Amino acid sequence: MAAVILKCGKGRTPGKPILITVEGTTFYKLHNFRSRFETYLDDYLSGDRKRYYEFTEVAQSGLVGAALAALID
Image (cartoon, rainbow, N blue to C red):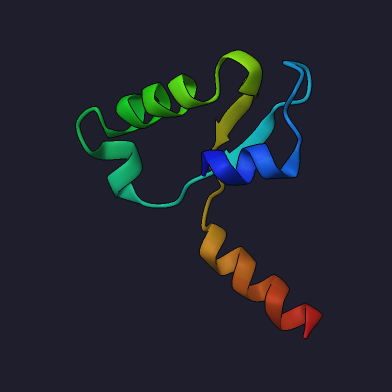
């Protein structure tokens, strides 16, 4: 995920962070998973590689994505 964030070149200012949406109970409910993930991501995206990001939760994102794909095709 850090490689994609760095490659896209976005998220360089705190006012315009990269929005990351994660679907699934593993990420949100597994003990310390989210906090450990954010710690590793913060460690990698620091110093010269500093990027700002924010996690957002989208209700039924799989269903919304499938509907958009059907409409576009």
